[in-house]
Image (cartoon, rainbow, N blue to C red; front, top):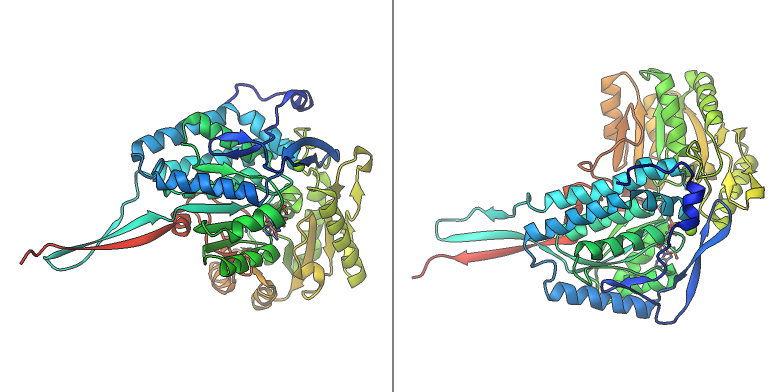
Length: 500
Ligand code: NAP
Ligand code: MG
């Protein structure tokens, strides 16, 4: 890690180098079409860099490179000890470039530098480290048979994996895929979101420097309808790992059906309920978690606690606390280390968020704070943290994923009603319940239909804990050993020992 955290991130951003080309077969290359597209700084609305725009021809080249590296066994047949050495060298390079990675992430997506430094980059590095460490600790199986035979049940890599990714946690979502994909011995092609190609390109370059064989990790920035679709429909991609919206996730199921029946795993959207019972152990702690559960990362988090379900009799008292905390959060320049809420990713998403705020008011919800665009003179896309009270469970702002700093507050009378409201959306990514009653806590976790449930906490997790959704939040799990299931298959080998 660089020894010192810079004091002046603006000064550092004037000299930082942007990766600008596609990363295919171990090197940076131009797009075959020669086309470029702009990546914008959401805090200023200005162009940060022109990036090579990959399309289906570039995807095809990248898939060929990945296939060749896999078929030649450049990675998969390397000894585990050597693979681990490369992964560890790669981690050292990421740590050496820690501040640059944090700055690239903040400039590209508008998130506060303090979050890039404390969360995105360290968790991304930790993810790669965790999977590097699993490689020499996972054993295959021997199935029980009689004396005269042996059955080996071996976990084998699938081959070439495609990953199509979102912009909200660009590097972290990339490493959630890269870690288990490489640990299992596959090669891969990543299509980052068009808004956020920089950090993924940067770590691909560092991987090559660390000695990852060419073709094993390829990154093709470009657009969803062209490059993303080409990867989804490619006949030589064995598996497609997607993180993004539910709407686009469904396309990938179709692409698989229309092409080679590749496996698909989907990490999609959410509308996660955060349920606060009157007997919560500490309302101040719960209020802080409720505010940060939605406003962290400008509300652009798949697991954001965007529906706050509060027991009727404590609602007013509890909301006062949430609003007081919200008003203390500093909204503004992402490069200021004191900023807690930065810019929304782009103009289109900002308009979408403001549109939902408008809908909420028209539907009859009560605006308690926020509701407007902020610091417009910066040219950036800032939206005030917004809280709606008196939200009915069937309103649009209680049903649809806004993906912005907008909290919808709904009241309930008892645990049964809370669960009914909580489960009443198409999503099932995450949920939380706050109570001191252990039976109520367990019963609620049993009844909630979500992939992750927190009790007396919001958004905690570690690498050992799988992450993913129920219902239309998708299927398949990131993180933990379960992520390996998506990128491997079991091969059974029956060996007959009887010679006569
Ligand atoms: P998105 O619009 O669904 O885009 C995700 C990726 O799909 C992008 O790379 C996008 O390319 C690509 N894409 C778009 N249209 C496509 C098409 N027709 N064919 C193939 N690929 C296509 O999602 P987003 O706006 O980037 O991210 C926000 C969403 O991600 C939210 O719904 C959020 O909940 C979800 N998310 C889920 C998780 C999770 O773990 N469950 C984590 C983070 C985010 P372009 O960039 O060109 O549009
Ligand atoms: Mg950008």
